[in-house]
Length: 320
Image 1 (cartoon, rainbow, N blue to C red):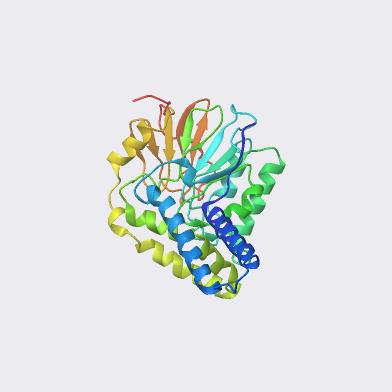
Image 2 (image 1 turned 90 degrees about the horizontal axis):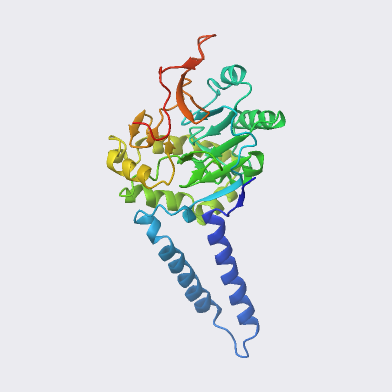
């Protein structure tokens, strides 16, 4: 089994700031003259923040290095021959549309979610919704019956590392992969390396100051802010959401180092080189990975019996 334990960026930065504080406090205690605490703390704070900003500069300028993300758990499925249902961008709200029907129809399958599972999901105590708790219960039941469940986070999930132990595998950023299988994956929000405005938003919204604010605000206020954040996400950076970034997607697919790159995020079915963007799953548009073949599934939760491969020829890694 391939296990990994990497720390999210906001916790790394928070640790660095705490170490700076401890160093300064120890230094002040050993000074023989009265310390100028105010100026020393200010200098150290400016230095630490400047260093953290410089370390994030390559990401801001378009780096696709996996070190700017994180992953935890096992990326190796116990049985790679088992069917894998892949779900991208269901954007669930009150109801987990299609999930129950799909589970009954594919009771023997493993599951991989490629982000934006909910309209907004903040992994801070007191901010969970009933539907998010129901989803975690569903994950528990799948795992209890021996099925592998992975979640690769998207642009609408924040600080969910505290839930990583509830999944077999969880990660964020680029470079997601299934150990020993022929696919790599990511949500897709970082494909467009020239979208500096979004990358800045990604850094700020997942930074340690924002995490501290989310931890400190009362839960009833946080729950009221969540719909506001949802509406803001619908209009943020609209200019870069109109067109599918074909050239950037092609480059990411060619450089991914695997026969197939799979993303969500763009809410449309696109095939470029060995890269596949799958449409959002709000109407049960899930996909199936089985025996090295990648097939769209026609599943409509409003119909009782429909569950089958749409295309006569499933997509195979490396095929035109």
